[in-house]
Amino acid sequence: MRRVDSAPNLVLATLWADALSAAGIEARVFSRYLSSIAGEIPPSEAEPTVWVLDDADLERARALLLELRRPLRGPGWNCRECGEHHGPQFAQCWKCGAGRG
Ligand SMILES: [Zn+2]
Image (cartoon, rainbow, N blue to C red):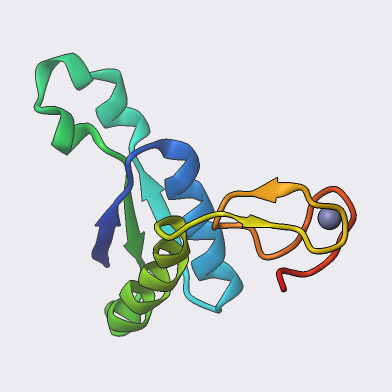
């Protein structure tokens, strides 16, 4: 088992693990125990971490997480159908369902 990366919060860590699972990589999130004692250790070590069960998946898992994180930077976008504004992480309009143009 290998550590892939740490996430800023548990929601994101779970999202990443789900994405890895969807790609056929068995992943786990470890955080709950550390979060409960977060007051006693540095915050960076209390961050939830994502692990792959199979060491051979590590490189692919890291590449996938990079893909997941990259769109979070960059500008948002406006739906060409309804004009709704979206954050860069969304590929589809939640309001009318149009794809990102
Ligand atoms: Zn729209």
